[in-house]
Amino acid sequence: MKRYVMANRPDGLADVVYEDDLEPHFKTNRFRELWLNTETPADLAGGADPVADQAMIHEPPDGGAVFRMLVFPPNSTQPTMTPEQVVEMHKAIHSTHIPSVEYLRTAKDPTMHRTDTLNYFVLTEGELWALSEGKDVLLKAGDALIQKGCMHGWRNDSDKRAVLAAVLIDAKPPA
Image (tube, rainbow, N blue to C red; front, top):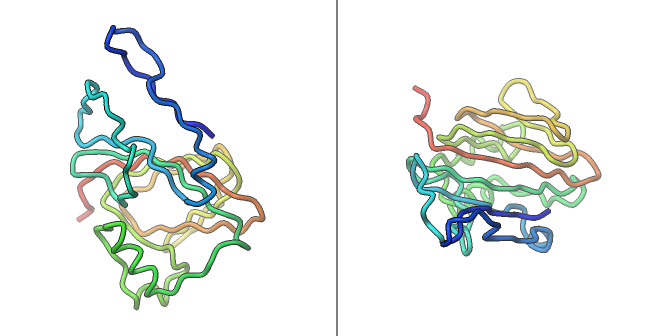
């Protein structure tokens, strides 16, 4: 997998201004921020890569959006996290809504969480369960999911990795 960013050069001609090989990154990380904008409409004039040294932020900034890739390893290689560890992880990535330890102890999966975002997901590789508090859906490569600020989680039960492209857009929380 690679990331390409096309934009206008200083001479006004369109060109590839950034190019990254993502695979080395995914050997040690499960996610990679691909782009971040801090406002809508987005400012196209900026020349700096907004995610060059960007640590994961769970939600985009107010009025902004984040584009990321996530890799879910095969189930057999995923370490099980305790509810307490999941809460600490949510604190570390600055989640707006941190599930309680009590909720996570009874949730169908420890990955359950929610964000104040409108999310567009496309599974690009493998199979991945999209979990809700009701019906779960087995996504296959090419499937798309729109998720609107509700509790959700992910589970890879297969023996192959799953790769998810995600666009998270700041949104007004449901009433």
